[in-house]
Length: 477
Image (cartoon, rainbow, N blue to C red; front, top):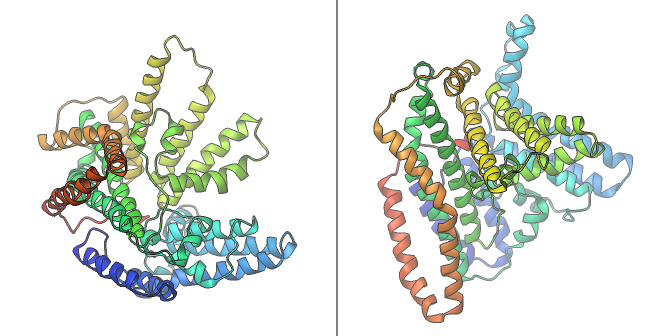
């Protein structure tokens, strides 16, 4: 059941109504049951996977709490993380590992995997595996005090973030899962704001670009793309994946708001970033923070003054980000490219000559956007050979002409324009809400006239561009 489906929207309205009608003592069980039901709509049999991860995490966390700082706690931590990552590797990366091993070990190719190992990819496993690992690490550091299996199960399986994030942490979410807050009208308005924005981002922008991007990245077509085609496809896919994933994040945040729960923000206008480092402080922010806190900082803890180790840890951490996204060399190359961008920026940060600071800032901003767009090519390409062909056309094997309908180029430019003004529209909405808080008469106009009209217009756009065949991109990760 997708967030932008009519069935989900109807079920959400009903589920929210029942939630607030229930006594608070029944809400936790109700939300957990809804979460399991939501996951079961994708695959009934794979519901057992998050339960297995919850059980492993719970048992290891209990040992860690009972033996703080002692060897059993360290062993439990290592065993728990190893088990979680092991399940993730088997579920998501087994095919990638086997196919690469078969290139160097012929025996692997001649011995197929048992049938039991060929189950499909459990939806959302990349997200809730990382959340389980962070729960164990935060338990060791004393940042999570809850010892309840119910708290852990709700934290891992809370349905708004279960499939594609945001990646939350126990100390952020578990205190909110008591569900004892009284109902407030602002929960509904806040939820509708994010939900309807996400519906429009997905259907109106992401899906509009999606069909052209799919055609342009077909293996037989990609080799025929001109330089102009390749650059437009890189930009179009960058916009598609941004608005697609931002849409899901907004709808997840909005869904949680209906229940009085606040999830962390996942995007902050990433294409307005002025540097590679700033891009990753704006793009998929919950994953960036997870990698920073649980991978980069520990790797770099003893190397603050050693640049070579610092740079190696940057590239390694970003390579892991790429691998997290998918079992393919294109994803890894995408991550390594971003790691290289961060290293180059870090190496020259503050050392470059600055004849004109404003001019230099704009130059770095433009180079950042060009580099980010180029990195989307291996991320989206079917093979490394296809990525190499398209990148070579973009940077040194120039060919000119336009191979697609003029509408593709126009829609891409319009999407760029919307992306450019997005922060200013958000500021305008914030100022409007702030004015409503100060002026009671305006608050009534905003609540009973402006907001309903805006909702109606946006819903019409959502319905007009509805394409139920277009799944969210991050479902495959």
